[in-house]
Figure 1 (cartoon, rainbow, N blue to C red):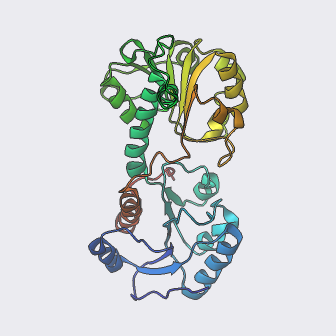
Figure 2 (figure 1 turned 45 degrees about the vertical axis):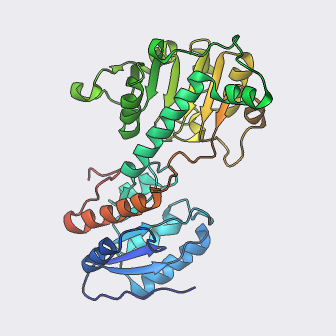
Figure 3 (figure 1 turned 180 degrees about the horizontal axis):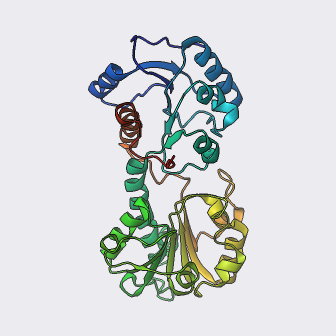
Length: 342
């Protein structure tokens, strides 16, 4: 295992898991004027834990640790005490990595130790919202069924009546940065938007959306789209009982985290016809997908957890991680922390 030694002296030390490969070089150079950087390579959790311990011993202490994930390699999570304990014990106060979600990080452990975790909410939010809007429209128009018909030579099945977006109510669960963007997208298509969130938005942020209780959203929405983080409270938020409260023929869209939906309960609701169609980018046991979801091609739109992936995601995500580091070094706080308040 090779540890890249820091070049600069007399500056705060920062540990990098992998180096940034897509960030503009002038910004990389600028970050280098603010801190010393030590780079270790990504590895499975227990192997990386050893590398972190060695890096702390040989080159620490570090004030921050940032992770530029290589998506094709084994991910090192969970980000827990066993992985990063030596960093925190020696004074590390920031971790930042890609993605809007953070269910892989032990936020309670970090918060107890007054350590920030910062996600990449901006770069992930725009792309996830775009993908969610696309999947909502696909579900409304039964796009998978129509494409299959065209490929099979079946012309204009008039027995299938797609929903009309302009006469449909969209229920957004989770009105954070992604939910707000989805609201804006779908209002352009004439959808009435209701939402449920941990707290109601300020009136100037609602811009035509109506706040409702969770049960009312389930009973009212024609399309339900999920944009909440995965927590102990949101795991299996949609389950047999909550799905039973939804309108017959409801459409379910999930681009948040797979376990927010009880997958077998969704399959059962699709098979019964209570849920007309589902559009899913994430799955409860991914990368495994319930076989019935794959078989029900006429009622499901499926993507392999790729809502954020496009030609510019790596540059934007890595730059946002470095921007979190820059803000932390200058002000003591990252741009997009998911915890704090101490």
